[in-house]
Length: 141
Image: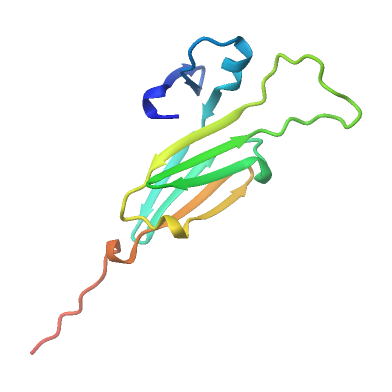
């Protein structure tokens, strides 16, 4: 989905992104909606840290992809369902999260580290060696 195909709207405190499908039924439109997780971005000399709020998303329902210079974060909340019961009709939709970021060339996408704990995704993206500040020693002659 390209940026031109996304339409952002605000519902309460949550942002919802919806793909711009043409025609179709209500079910397809509902399946095309994503919540945009809130993210904090912190930078230091060695790289950046992204902290994304993904409450209810388990590790096995979280997907991180790097495609070129784009980082995509997607996750689905696991709906608890008793083993002997099956949903026949449900009006409550399980939230799905999606957010993409354009990565700077200064960042090393091949060395991204990810950790999910208590509904917070912690992504550490180090800077390339040439982009890190370095100290130059001055010698007296």
